Image 1 (tube, rainbow over the protein chains, first blue to last red):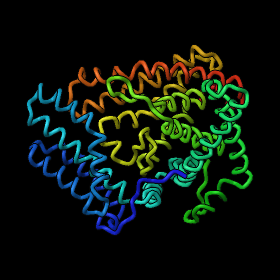
Image 2 (cartoon, rainbow over the protein chains, first blue to last red):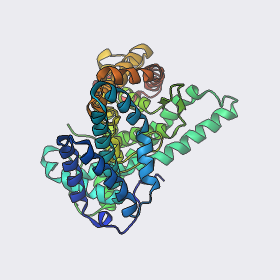
Image 3 (cartoon, rainbow over the protein chains, first blue to last red):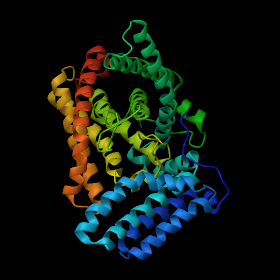
Image 4 (cartoon, rainbow over the protein chains, first blue to last red):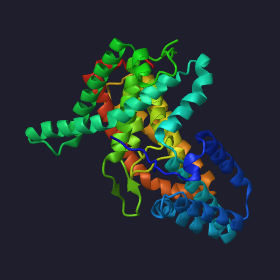
Length: 215
Length: 185
């Protein structure tokens, strides 16, 4: 099973409402582009980094975010410092660091289920336009379930190829793998249709009994 | 414009294919640029499922990323992806699949390799870069030429992926006509 990035905890950020966290993040994302002072932005980045240990996430997760950006930070320093000066390079780097650290902070402190609920609630008013939050949630859950199933199918197909002495012909494996996956998807679709998508969706959550796919 | 249960399941399947491709080991070019199989996922989704379902499949994938699943190659995911310089590529995945699927239908021969490869290259490279590169320029406030100088390193790998995706998609359409790729979807 694929695990989310959420790290359980009891910090202020863990307990804050999901909607508030997302709105704050969006406001921060927009607001930081109006700040041009590298010192202020640098302070923001330091605070965002310190928020990781403060929320019980440890130092390592924050470092990992910075390490993942190293390549881009070097690139910015290289091109920006040369073209527009060091202040500008520091400004862009600090803003990028702050935003990535804060965005990932929200991801680390919010469980997948809470984000999914927020998504469903946000999309609910779009129902008259043909958007069906339950159908979407069904597809999302199905995908998470499909990933390990696909990996298993790939393993089976590889073994079948190996039995014929062709375990290294990965291209020859791709087509039968996709066709087996399509066949499996058709079986899943038939099973869901036999039960009725409404029933499947209600089985997952009974909050909206009249969630229909095609309306 | 309603989706059948089958459409929904197929979209979920190709979102999962995209995720599974990210789990494959990536290899690194001499310049330290990682090449992953992942962008092949949006070409396959578009070329095999068609424009509409391919777009939906990639939309599911992008939503799962935003919801906090580490599905990008190297185990990246979460909202941080969209704040980072390469976030534009993630946002571009659904549109790349849409363009690929539309082009496959437009060329009219989903079972032929050459038009499929061309559709994958135009949709999965040109359209994807059209989202990814301006986003990168905007986030890092770098010059376009500096970003292009880096992005060009991905081009040979992406061309290989377009050829593979086009060949796979055309062969799958021959072996599984029930997909109905002959009609524009």
